[in-house]
Image (cartoon, rainbow, N blue to C red; front, side, top):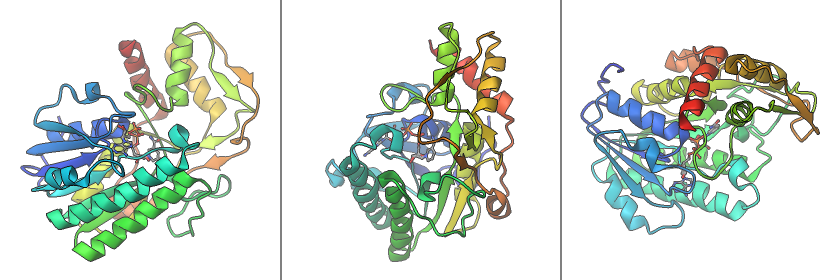
Amino acid sequence: MRAMSERIAGEKVVVTGGAGFIGSHLCAALLARGAAEVTVVDSLRYGDRANLAALPRLTLVKHCLGTDCADELARVLAGARYLFHLAAEKHNQSKDEPARVLAANVAGTATLLELAGKAGVRKVVFTSSLYAYGRVAGAPFDEAERPEPRTVYGISKLAGEHLTAWAAREHGFAYNVLRYLFVYGPKQFAGMGYKSVIVKSFERLLAGVGPVVYGDGEQRLDYVYVDDAVEATLAALERDVSGEVLNIGSGRATSVNELVDAIVRVSGKDLPPTHGPADWTAGSVRVANPDKTARVLGWRATTPLAEGLARTYAWVCGAR
Ligand SMILES: NC(=O)c1ccc[n+]([C@@H]2O[C@H](COP(=O)([O-])OP(=O)(O)OC[C@H]3O[C@@H](n4cnc5c(N)ncnc54)[C@H](O)[C@@H]3O)[C@@H](O)[C@H]2O)c1
């Protein structure tokens, strides 16, 4: 159990997307830190009630941001001191439905933040994405560079960042924006939606077949374990800083070949990967520069990849 948090203890906190992967871990951490009440707003399109089943002092409100009547949201936000906004249509889930992405991530975010301001919420943490940067090669992403998103999802996340800053100015609340890199860990996939390459590879190994590597496997990504990402997300609320845009990544570039080797090692199976055709990720590098986050939040990712994968594998085995 984590230590109580002075800022969070005794408060009502709203978490959008709380039934999903990262959100459900965040809810557990908030309750462990003494939140009086956590209210989750989730459409349940990708999330799962079961992710929250064991948590006390938690209310789940089924609500689709950008689509459902906002009156309900105003009721949910009444009396809330803090808001973590994680609900989103993600790139891999809905890239063929740009209107859905824009409704949820832009219109839904604008309405939510406006109502949060009116309700007197004191601080908001908005979860953005590496997709806000757009580029897929070159040096580690730096928060000072000009974002040039190349997907509707990335555009919607950048819009969400600006909407958060706008609502904060209008209503006088504090906020921080977190650009997550590739977060992984238990509960990553439930129900429909995009299944992470890590979970998919473990499931293949358990079924007696090797993981699939697309192309030469030299794509390099920045993996961050979910507990580390949650610590950073809490720090973004707890630290007395506002208006910051921060990368949440390990700063380490891991190739898909290295990742898959580690996955096979963790599983203890003697099943080498097979190769599939190259896709758009061929030759890509997507890694964060984590230095600003370390300076501003005093946070760095600490979970070694092998350990995070072992915990994820234990969950995949238990979840079957
Ligand atoms: N997982 C990652 O590696 C990663 C990387 C970058 C950014 N992010 C961001 O982090 C946040 C959480 O991601 P996750 O991986 O936990 O995703 P997830 O899909 O597991 O969780 C998102 C939750 O939001 C809910 N949701 C979607 N649209 C909604 C809407 N219109 N109204 C209400 N609820 C809605 C879903 O049902 C789901 O429970 C998202 O904002 C995502 O863009 C995640």
